[in-house]
Length: 167
Image 1 (cartoon, rainbow, N blue to C red):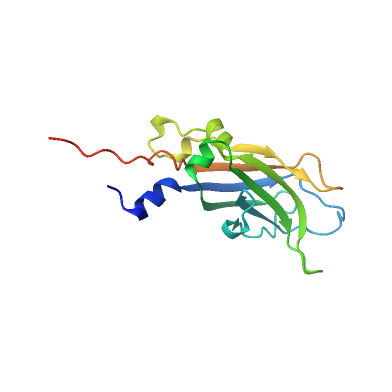
Image 2: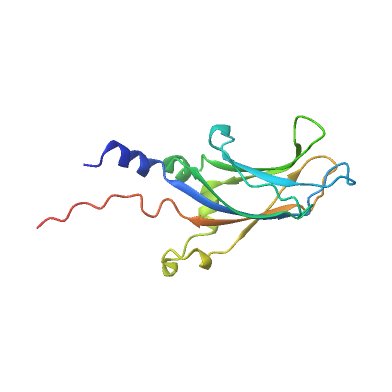
């Protein structure tokens, strides 16, 4: 019988993503530089959110190539009840809050359905395609904004315990 720690790991596997880049970002005051970062969460849960580093050089087309890991509930993901939220912000020195640029909501279930790890990949994530999603931008923001994600590991591949061999 599986230990309770192993059972929790099976029920709540890790989703590993690479937040690659965004493009076409803008905000109301186009004269200001944008130092953009992304915050990624599941179902808008701030307790389990991951943040990319700030790209100080990319302006409206930031690049991060930053790997994040989030714990997901397998049953909820398979039932389509989990949403990956990616929010984009510009680091802002002028006030307390950073400038919100926009966001995108992605069904975790659809994320895996649209980009399965091929059996021939044998764990090689370089054989996976990048996924591009349109960003819902704030008023005055660009309309062609998009973000590119690259799913690294399917957390549901190794989630079943093999039964013991009987002699």
